[in-house]
Image 1: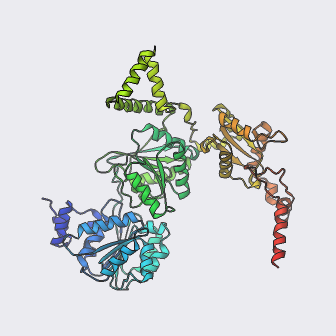
Image 2: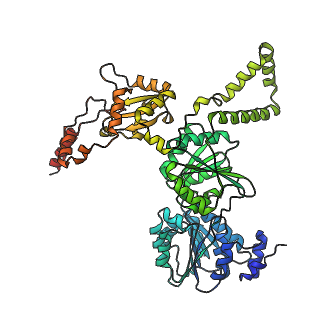
Image 3: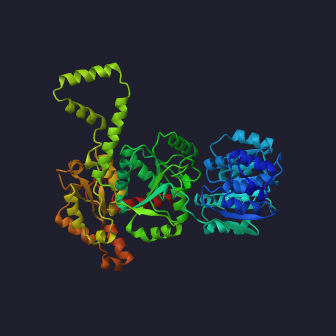
Length: 602
């Protein structure tokens, strides 16, 4: 029988102790030990800061269960969560902790049936757990009345503020009674969270638990020093080297999430992005596919991943280094759970060394430095995986028809080994082709900056890449992204990952491409009547590139009128200005059309 004496000493009732015993609790966590006695006192408000996975939910749920009467017509407790998944987890936890006490718990969130929620609210509930948007919707409809509220809880407050819920939260709290008790629990405690406390809380107590690397026992933590431009290549090598990779890749922004996920998908990986721009339905589908292992890679932001409950993750990869040590621990803690081993990998650029050193110092984490796997190492690991895969296939009983075909083939073929190798090659195709992995340059920032563009171009030639000159630049509306997208859209067989080293200047641009891709691009943009838009870069053009990268002092001193005059004089040559071949009107023409439209309006 579990010894729950510590929970009894915190002031919990026998009914609650029975519920804890049924759930298999043995002793309180640090945040529970500190918060429960405080919250069982009258009128005490608490801000609790503790890492994910340390029992924050029980720390506020148990005192609420002990304090509210139950069987109320109007809610006595409101708990706000940033995501649907977290709201469901909190609601389930409260239901399991309430034991035999008659408490009705309702979860409200966007994307769920409004009719079902309206019926439950009309019938009467004691605890409402929901996302800010849907809770505010019910308040405005008049279907959620908070006049009887005793507790208002912000769970994962930092993430709600990051997701832009600040206005909704303020609107909700303004509808709550003055004499309610407000609680905030979060993994991190930035200034905006504390400012909410100053506005809406009275004499609160701040409870912080010691920051510990709770995942370090079962998680092997590694970091790689790589340049930003080489991160994707390093990522694919790591994924290809590992057996049964099943992990989450953390990025800083939604845009980066989409970009990395799309590039992984285009390379044949089972990947999907998870970020705040997804609808609730899209989010549910992605998470379900990941849990059912139809996906092996989730590319997520910290905000979108909060509340995820995915077991057996083999890897967590920090594609972008987190800003806060607590966020690092939160990410790493998603693997190496339930006694299983996991791996946490962090990519560090030279500029991020100082911040990473700070994270290591604060978290006291043992993080091992390793070199990015070489193509040879990745291919060797793939051979082992293929061998294992083939042995598994061979051990299964084949159909008789296949046995007959194999027998006939081996009987006719003079070299059975060659026949078997050809068969394996047809199944695994280019899996063992080293050329699919690009060169990763030295991460030394100083070394990279000291190299001129001519040297970079020579390096490109040495690595079977061709430096291309594009007779279009920023004046033509080009950006690195639009240049790459334009070429990929127009030239069949050229992929986004083929184009590297893109430099967009004022009047022209440069990029690198493998020989085969470069040949297709040059052929597509060749123009027999005049100069082609894209050609091979020559020495004189590389000189122009080198000079244009340096700031022009005379241009800096140029007055506004002179810059405007130069801009008005500029006339793009030819009608094939855009890469897609569509004509682009000159600036003078645009100005005339604008003037005409103004006169018409007058």
